[in-house]
Length: 515
Image 1 (tube, rainbow, N blue to C red):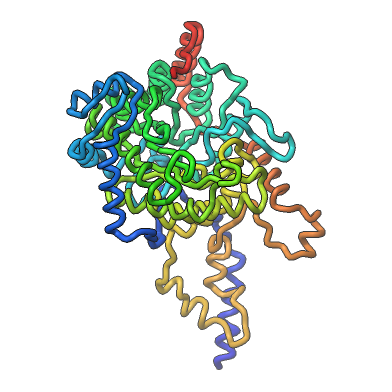
Image 2 (cartoon, rainbow, N blue to C red; image 1 turned 135 degrees about the vertical axis):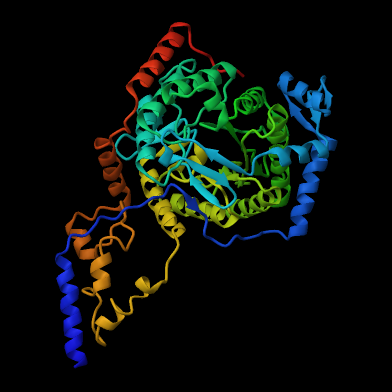
């Protein structure tokens, strides 16, 4: 009787096979970090690092090259030495700035489904950014061009796991006084994700704000009411805030747009050789920049950040994905949680090509960010040579890993449907198989992650297909994405206003970057 029941159940399972199956749908846009957070230092030592950073700002100070920024600090009560351009920031001023900085930032993209919130616990990825060169297996390593910028932008838009547009590569065939028109127009036309603008002087920043408002149909009040774009502010470690970076902090804060503050502290070079010393310096520099934003506009959206790794002491070259890089990310996460602020960390690789070293370094750095609870992870895909090059193939292979991380963020379920006592366990006799159970038939199209790059075929099948390795498969993937790319639909009148603005400003001479 049991055998007959088993046959009946198996027949029911096979019958379900004929039913049309829905395709697998994913949504990687509103991710939460599901991983237990790691700590590299005890809580009392983190508190000591914070106290040391406050002491550094008050007693040693930071050099601020922008006169307007020094005036803002002085007006608020900081001690300023105009001859040395040094600013000494008291702890009360810093603590007030931390208190006024928003703990949750609602970022508004070009489409509402692309909106996301930055806060502790949320998780956002960006691809590699700011490289002067591009590389792929077919065209080789080269100075990045406008075409490279557009192609990377299309790849970033294609992968749901990238929620923010990064500065990708520098289109070096576009003149610097017109480059921000080119990159902004491309972002407005080819993607509806959250855009990035460089801080290279007020004229360029104001141009970008106007272009964004025109393309998105935003009034001044709507634009200032929420962050619609972001910039990345790099301090010049140790303890220097240069003119364009300080001006960028002020400009973005005044207009209610987001700055991601990122000291670039390499242990043994621009920072102490220890993790604790380097992160303390990074923390102090981030606090100084954050304070400037809040003195400019209390409540301005600002993201705490760090990019701390070590140098190779034999060559002086930056190294990434190292144990020290991992530890620095953990320490930065502890300090960000000490402040309660959303924060940015980074992966990346120093490898020269997309090889096993590149994969190891990027993934080790990525897991350091995940275990540290980073809110924004930049350079998560494509970055080579410590940031000198972005690779098309590496962007594809790294996106595969990020997709799998995003799958883990969804969380596993263990309800009655998942346990499947009636639809799976009781349908199969001992030594049987589960291929044809009701549960399998209902889920076989949607149960598992579908790779865009990895090949799960056995050796014989793989060989018959031409023994194509992952790097060469990645070439075919990015070429296919670009060949079949469709931009999101944009409002024609708004794009017309954008084009008119660019034409007029170009006729007027554009806006050279300021230094």
